[in-house]
Image 1 (tube, rainbow, N blue to C red):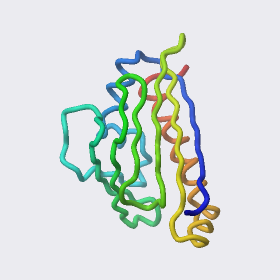
Image 2: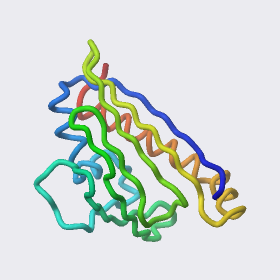
Image 3: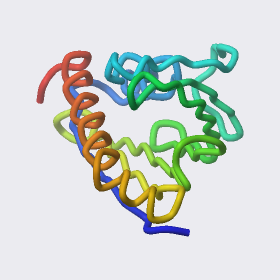
Image 4: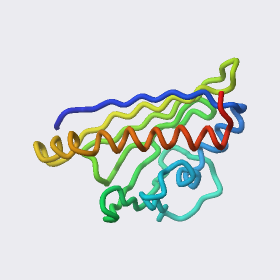
Length: 155
Protein backbone atom coordinates (compact mmCIF):
# COMPACT_ATOMS: atom_id res chain seq x y z
CA UNK A 1 0.00 0.00 0.00
CA UNK A 2 1.20 3.50 -0.79
CA UNK A 3 1.45 6.53 1.41
CA UNK A 4 -1.56 7.26 3.63
CA UNK A 5 -2.64 10.90 3.54
CA UNK A 6 -4.78 12.56 6.22
CA UNK A 7 -7.14 15.51 6.03
CA UNK A 8 -8.97 17.09 8.95
CA UNK A 9 -11.50 19.91 8.77
CA UNK A 10 -13.54 21.43 11.58
CA UNK A 11 -16.46 23.77 11.43
CA UNK A 12 -19.01 25.03 13.95
CA UNK A 13 -22.56 24.97 12.64
CA UNK A 14 -25.09 27.52 13.77
CA UNK A 15 -27.77 24.91 14.41
CA UNK A 16 -28.95 22.19 16.77
CA UNK A 17 -27.67 18.63 16.82
CA UNK A 18 -31.04 17.39 15.56
CA UNK A 19 -30.85 19.65 12.50
CA UNK A 20 -27.18 18.89 11.83
CA UNK A 21 -27.68 15.14 12.10
CA UNK A 22 -30.86 15.22 9.99
CA UNK A 23 -28.97 16.97 7.19
CA UNK A 24 -25.61 15.18 7.20
CA UNK A 25 -26.98 11.69 7.79
CA UNK A 26 -28.89 11.79 4.49
CA UNK A 27 -26.80 10.81 1.45
CA UNK A 28 -28.91 12.89 -0.93
CA UNK A 29 -27.76 16.08 0.82
CA UNK A 30 -24.13 15.56 -0.23
CA UNK A 31 -24.96 16.98 -3.65
CA UNK A 32 -25.85 20.31 -1.98
CA UNK A 33 -22.32 20.68 -0.57
CA UNK A 34 -20.35 19.33 -3.55
CA UNK A 35 -19.00 21.63 -6.30
CA UNK A 36 -21.28 21.62 -9.36
CA UNK A 37 -18.41 20.86 -11.76
CA UNK A 38 -18.16 17.37 -10.24
CA UNK A 39 -21.72 16.61 -11.39
CA UNK A 40 -22.23 14.38 -8.35
CA UNK A 41 -25.11 11.96 -8.85
CA UNK A 42 -26.28 9.18 -6.52
CA UNK A 43 -27.02 6.01 -8.49
CA UNK A 44 -28.15 3.74 -5.63
CA UNK A 45 -31.87 3.52 -4.88
CA UNK A 46 -33.19 6.34 -2.69
CA UNK A 47 -33.95 5.58 0.93
CA UNK A 48 -36.10 7.44 3.41
CA UNK A 49 -33.75 6.55 6.28
CA UNK A 50 -30.72 8.30 7.71
CA UNK A 51 -27.39 6.52 7.23
CA UNK A 52 -27.07 3.10 8.83
CA UNK A 53 -24.24 0.61 9.23
CA UNK A 54 -24.03 -1.61 6.18
CA UNK A 55 -25.63 0.92 3.85
CA UNK A 56 -24.10 0.91 0.36
CA UNK A 57 -24.17 4.20 -1.56
CA UNK A 58 -23.18 4.33 -5.22
CA UNK A 59 -22.63 7.47 -7.21
CA UNK A 60 -20.87 8.96 -10.16
CA UNK A 61 -18.52 11.92 -9.92
CA UNK A 62 -16.62 13.78 -12.62
CA UNK A 63 -13.56 15.20 -10.87
CA UNK A 64 -11.26 15.56 -13.90
CA UNK A 65 -12.20 16.79 -17.39
CA UNK A 66 -15.80 15.65 -16.95
CA UNK A 67 -14.74 11.98 -17.10
CA UNK A 68 -17.25 9.93 -15.09
CA UNK A 69 -15.94 7.81 -12.22
CA UNK A 70 -18.12 5.29 -10.41
CA UNK A 71 -17.73 5.25 -6.66
CA UNK A 72 -19.21 2.92 -4.05
CA UNK A 73 -19.02 3.56 -0.33
CA UNK A 74 -20.26 1.62 2.63
CA UNK A 75 -21.39 3.21 5.85
CA UNK A 76 -19.46 1.05 8.30
CA UNK A 77 -20.20 2.65 11.68
CA UNK A 78 -22.98 4.89 12.99
CA UNK A 79 -23.58 6.30 16.45
CA UNK A 80 -26.61 8.53 16.02
CA UNK A 81 -25.94 12.15 16.87
CA UNK A 82 -22.20 11.52 17.33
CA UNK A 83 -20.52 10.13 14.22
CA UNK A 84 -20.65 7.95 11.14
CA UNK A 85 -17.94 6.52 8.92
CA UNK A 86 -17.96 5.82 5.21
CA UNK A 87 -15.38 3.67 3.46
CA UNK A 88 -14.79 3.28 -0.26
CA UNK A 89 -15.54 -0.19 -1.59
CA UNK A 90 -14.89 0.70 -5.25
CA UNK A 91 -13.64 3.96 -6.65
CA UNK A 92 -10.75 6.22 -7.48
CA UNK A 93 -8.68 5.80 -4.31
CA UNK A 94 -6.57 2.94 -3.04
CA UNK A 95 -8.10 3.69 0.39
CA UNK A 96 -10.81 6.13 1.47
CA UNK A 97 -11.92 6.19 5.13
CA UNK A 98 -14.02 9.25 6.05
CA UNK A 99 -15.12 9.96 9.61
CA UNK A 100 -17.91 12.50 10.23
CA UNK A 101 -17.99 13.62 13.90
CA UNK A 102 -20.57 15.88 15.57
CA UNK A 103 -20.36 17.48 19.01
CA UNK A 104 -22.64 19.98 20.74
CA UNK A 105 -20.69 23.09 21.75
CA UNK A 106 -21.96 26.39 23.22
CA UNK A 107 -21.94 27.98 19.73
CA UNK A 108 -23.91 25.17 18.07
CA UNK A 109 -22.52 21.91 16.67
CA UNK A 110 -18.88 21.25 15.92
CA UNK A 111 -18.53 19.06 12.85
CA UNK A 112 -15.18 17.39 12.24
CA UNK A 113 -14.28 15.52 9.07
CA UNK A 114 -11.27 13.21 9.22
CA UNK A 115 -10.24 11.50 6.00
CA UNK A 116 -7.50 8.93 5.54
CA UNK A 117 -6.81 8.04 1.92
CA UNK A 118 -4.19 6.65 -0.39
CA UNK A 119 -3.67 6.77 -4.12
CA UNK A 120 -3.72 3.75 -6.42
CA UNK A 121 -1.13 3.09 -9.13
CA UNK A 122 1.99 3.48 -7.00
CA UNK A 123 4.33 6.20 -8.28
CA UNK A 124 1.80 7.37 -10.90
CA UNK A 125 -0.82 7.85 -8.18
CA UNK A 126 1.63 9.81 -6.04
CA UNK A 127 2.44 12.05 -9.01
CA UNK A 128 -1.29 12.63 -9.62
CA UNK A 129 -1.67 13.44 -5.92
CA UNK A 130 1.09 16.03 -6.06
CA UNK A 131 -0.11 17.54 -9.35
CA UNK A 132 -3.84 17.90 -8.65
CA UNK A 133 -5.57 15.47 -6.26
CA UNK A 134 -4.32 17.09 -3.03
CA UNK A 135 -5.30 20.56 -4.25
CA UNK A 136 -8.65 19.34 -5.53
CA UNK A 137 -9.53 17.74 -2.18
CA UNK A 138 -8.62 20.96 -0.35
CA UNK A 139 -10.79 22.93 -2.80
CA UNK A 140 -13.72 20.52 -2.35
CA UNK A 141 -13.60 20.85 1.44
CA UNK A 142 -13.27 24.66 1.14
CA UNK A 143 -16.36 24.65 -1.08
CA UNK A 144 -18.17 22.45 1.44
CA UNK A 145 -17.33 24.86 4.25
CA UNK A 146 -18.82 27.80 2.33
CA UNK A 147 -21.89 25.81 1.25
CA UNK A 148 -22.50 24.68 4.84
CA UNK A 149 -22.20 28.26 6.08
CA UNK A 150 -24.81 29.32 3.51
CA UNK A 151 -27.12 26.54 4.68
CA UNK A 152 -26.66 26.91 8.44
CA UNK A 153 -25.38 30.44 8.87
CA UNK A 154 -21.93 31.70 9.76
CA UNK A 155 -20.54 31.45 13.30
